[in-house]
Length: 64
View 1: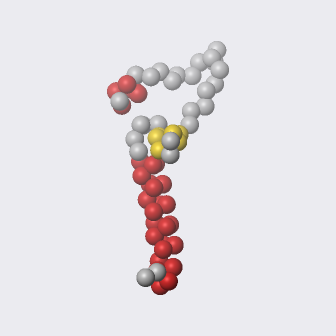
View 2 (view 1 turned 30 degrees about the horizontal axis):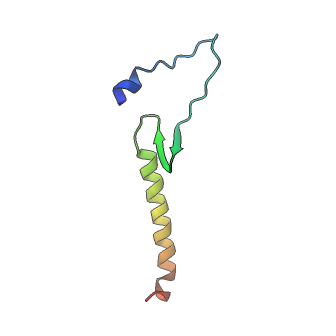
View 3 (view 1 turned 90 degrees about the vertical axis):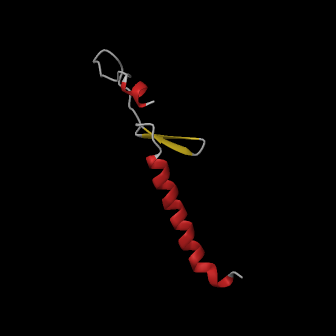
């Protein structure tokens, strides 16, 4: 996949309209970055999991 991505020509031409490329996009809840990797997705997922684990820690005394 990276080989195909390297073949895409994104050179800017003064005659063509400017296209602003996004660093990452979300599709069906999955974050995909420019290199077609899941690095952003994994980092955001671990941040959300850490958040919810901290929230559970505050209520664990009330759980059986």
